[in-house]
Image 1: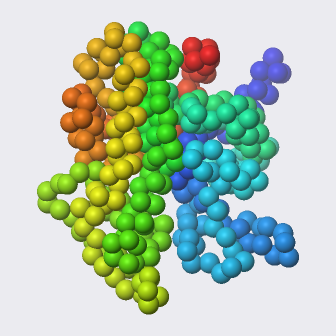
Image 2: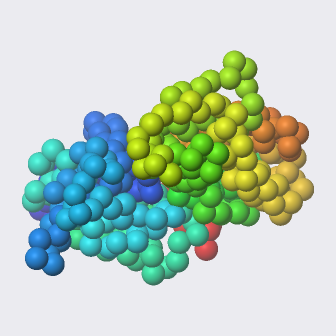
Image 3: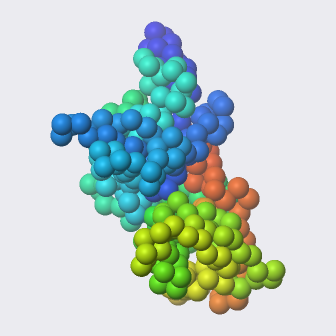
Length: 348
């Protein structure tokens, strides 16, 4: 009886669902809903060889490209996995404490984290250890495409084929799901970050202008597209002239972004086709009837769904609240840990 009483106290602050993304980290509180949606960025100052974290999330991203030499703005996750364990631990700890609003100082939450399906057992262990050191009582991992499918409300536990394409900041995950398991999948390290880098390279090559990572992301969000659309959008951007080193501006058009991202869009389409080719015939029929579902921030690139639909001949649907797909799926699993057990069992 006392054991049950203390167990209830331990979970009193609420449990957390986390989409630990390369670009952004989203945290869903079991009692409050979405409480954090901030960049996965940390600002670190080095003093006499010792690193000290001075900002995390939104505050750190505002420093991007604006810091002196002794302050570095770090993204501790690359291609969906932890690249800097110590900084990732600090970031996770910050987000967990902020999500619990101080209530988790002594009372530790259960945590469900969405991770790319391509990460290794060692990398999975690193995520678990980072969350435990950050203050989690129990840590459960779920593959991002499965979480995205659950978040989209797809019938993952039914004998029906569902195709989900989750495009995040560091990875694109294409998966066919049926009976609580991933039947076949394709993962590639081509996603939102690569779109940003492609835009930076294109602007430098065509206009002789060096722009920052933040500016490239703004271009992608404001006028970015996977195909030419009407009316064509444009925007003025500022940067540093390659030859003179003097600041100047140019007008970037939507057509520029289409050309810049063409190679990466083609890679995503190829991954979808490759997965369809591996799909059993009965499940292929389900997908043709029900469509391909897009989730994740990268799926919001204008016209990307139309490009896929034209190439495959299958209707393509961008799910509602695509940015929240993975974290919503993790949140649903928090309410039904047995579902996670069935999913992990089916995926072995």
